[in-house]
Length: 298
Image (cartoon, rainbow, N blue to C red; front, top):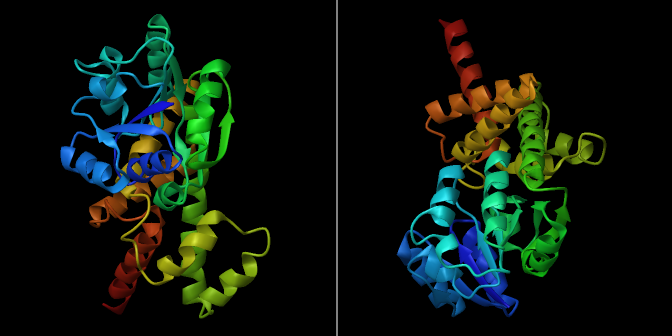
């Protein structure tokens, strides 16, 4: 089976690498050609100069780019995927984008006798590198079934959750949960530190009970050390939360915690933390506490 992979960022680069290691014939494309060249040299794969060239002859065309506009450009613009893909092939979009875009592209794909699966992922850079991502998918069962073995090359869990758009909606649920959990963990660590506790010891204990979370187990050490130059960037989280809040508005829903935490991430951006990990919500709290303490001393 021939696979094209478009978008070689911190996620796409290792994901495409797992495909090559699994024995697929892989052709990659990236807007910054030097990344495609590096991937090609690293994994002995082929690189293309346009999305259309990459898609030509491919059974599966996977992409992992930035946002709705990027997906449209890669798929629908001149020399895009639609200009090269053959009938019977399947497009798998791993970008976190809107459900409306997924439905739009599914309709356009069907008109070309091409399958489309919206398949955003969770697990971050580490999950991509370790081949342990979670994939939330939406689309027709036959298209999903054809793409499943490819996705299993870099994922530990792949699940079809409904029709086109369901994968993106599920990713929104994922981001809502993360936003609330990280804020709660940040407040807990701030409280623990100022209460004079051994925070590492406290986390080791409570992580064995009902408070346990992935964020707690994987981020508390770096949070306590004030280390945020890693992981899923605040800029990307705000992009995702803007999609969540737009969809919530469309559904007539009020998401107060998500709205609040989105604003907190805006504060982190203003602190210069646009590329910090999402766990940097603690840095915001620490900064605010320092400001209050300084004013009290005055």
